Length: 120
View 1: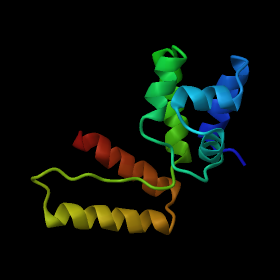
View 2 (view 1 turned 90 degrees about the vertical axis):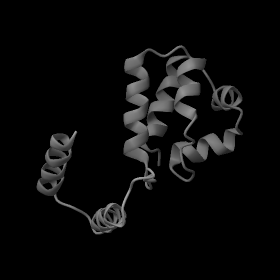
View 3 (view 1 turned 180 degrees about the vertical axis):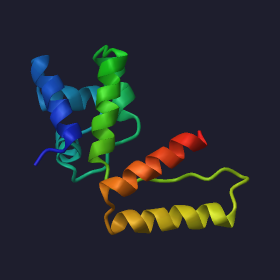
View 4 (view 1 turned 60 degrees about the vertical axis):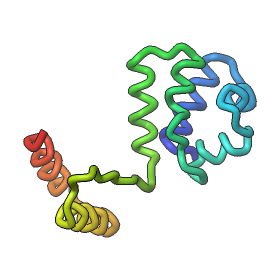
């Protein structure tokens, strides 16, 4: 089954009359790897969205759509801490990760997003 990112890539290819191999060649990956990315069996390489955007002359809205689809397809994320991060920062990130492993309600997400938006 295709991920949201895979659906976006497939639509982009079909709209432009391209084969999976054509896009794989542009990205310098194998067609089987690209197929696995689309299906969610492989992680989405960080560079792929920028390379697709540049290679197919996508506008900023199209690139943003790809980024959103990639986020919707991501199963794991990495949090990088800066040099001034504390143990409390790490503990909070770990707690948040464990919370998401167990699933969260829409109300919890709305409250968390509101809190984080106010922090910015």
